[in-house]
Length: 201
Figure (spheres, rainbow, N blue to C red):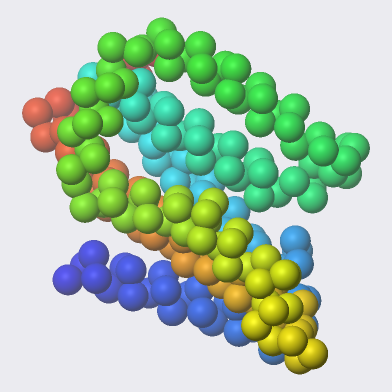
């Protein structure tokens, strides 16, 4: 019941946020909108959850670090407008830095990578996270393209409408990732034999 209530509340929050952005603030769900902030918050917290898991559970460290790094790169890409204040496309610098350092760390813990991935893939929370990820990187990109909505709406095409649809679908994906991450954390990353311990790099 608690899991259902949490997901219900997150979905309501997402809808209310988009409604406020579109009808009250009229910000076209820009980079400075509440919807964008919520997306960034969800993926950043999801990355932090898996990073914490990597610190606590040595026997799953490679897998948990991999997910944390992936979500951290998604957070950087989601906030590319902020990094563009340095120069256009600067977001690639911190993203590559995280990938290089993270790749070294994962290689160091490669013996804790494959088996945890296979075991976690059977869990429903992993399915939620994977569904959210695919919604963000595949479905929202295809469903939210301007040419798609121009063909559907014809002369009534409105780019603001397209933005609301795309950002709303993306926010749904981030909700699923965040919810799945929280539930995975509350289930101790499906590791009930090795309780959280002091950090060991």
